[in-house]
Image (cartoon, each protein chain N blue to C red):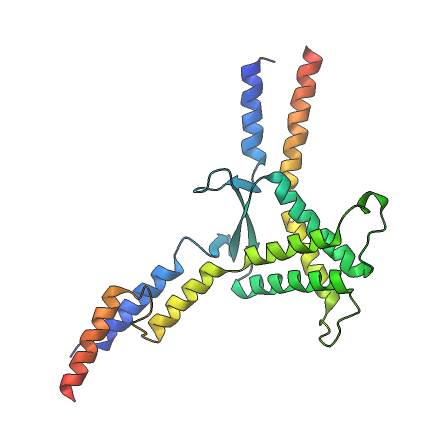
Length: 137
Length: 109
């Protein structure tokens, strides 16, 4: 009978592989401090600064509550444009890659061998284990 | 200052200061920025704050309707902190250094 230990070992190996995928949030360590980093795409510096400015604009508009700026220099700024840019940023920050990792991790923990991208080696081990179990019943 | 030497200094200043936006390793003509978050949950909190502040910008901080937003000031504060993290300070320093080198060159000429 195949030892369940072998399956657990393979599961941990697969989980480690998923955790180390080069996409999604990446682990960074500075001294004793561990954190994660998010990567965002921009066309250029101008687009980047527009986005940062939009963050400040929505904060001003949220505090002001009137949908307008006091400063004359900002009077041409459009509320809808700022909100749209911030919502776009929120969409781009959505951790889709991490959700994919989550799905794969859950599939391994729940032994859902039919799920898309389930590790082949683990699938075979689980199949052999299930067949052996059936024979012994 | 010789042109070659000047461009060498430009490149050096660029290497020292252009850190916030870096060219994307796989996509041409795209830049990427990298910012820190504590963990996955805190990234979700930040996204939540961005959406909340957008709602407040559209509806006003007081008017929540049938679903008033909790701790609106805290959400605004978090978005402001995020804007602080994104400020391109290194890039601003880069422009200052380049201008300084160009001014120096102009004086020499």
